Amino acid sequence: MFATSLFPPVMSRLTSAVFAVLQKFLVVFGLALLVALVGAHNGHAAFVDGIRSVLPKEALLGDELETDEPAEALGDVPSVLLTPRMRAALAYVSMRYHVSTEALQPIFATAEEVARDLHLDPLLIVAVIGVESGFNPLSQSVVGAQGLMQVVPRFHQDKLPSDAGSLPFFDPLTNVQVGARVLKESIRRNGGLEDGLQQFGGATKDPARRYATRVLAERQRLELAAQRWRST
Image 1 (cartoon, one colour):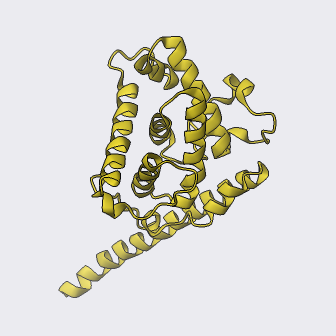
Image 2 (image 1 turned 60 degrees about the horizontal axis):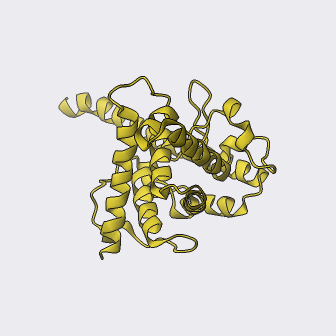
């Protein structure tokens, strides 16, 4: 009798677990397909190639990885186009956000390139991406901010490259290029990093500066991950 009464709850939990895993698979697969289509439309073949491996096991399991893993657990990261500091940060981001290193590589390369042009810290750009979208290139806020760095299209059309496609702010590489310029402009206009971050995050009226604190804390985590990786 005990086994009979226990069986339905066990089956119910098992069924729920199976559906949860299936749902996560469908969401991640749909995201990969949509990002690949956006990349193909805008001519970023390197990003499309990286999307082929954007379905890691961790994303299906949904288990949050510990962010204090030793550097040797970060795995091998391709070195093409990236400095050692950015390769280490990429490995950390790949584990924390469950995104393949191949898909992240062109994003990090773009962040590094535009940061060099604008005299910004590339890890600051990566930190903003983490806080704003969690590395979801199709993210959109309730106010219409789009993409990795949550750029509001109606305010920043002038920053788009001449060859931008029909969905430019959902193109990850274009979004990073434009978002970094918006960030640089905010820092310049507000006379400093923290105030600039507050404006970028739409939080200028917050005296506690919580948005800037979150971004700077994320940048510090990235820097520590890079230091651990390089010390091995």
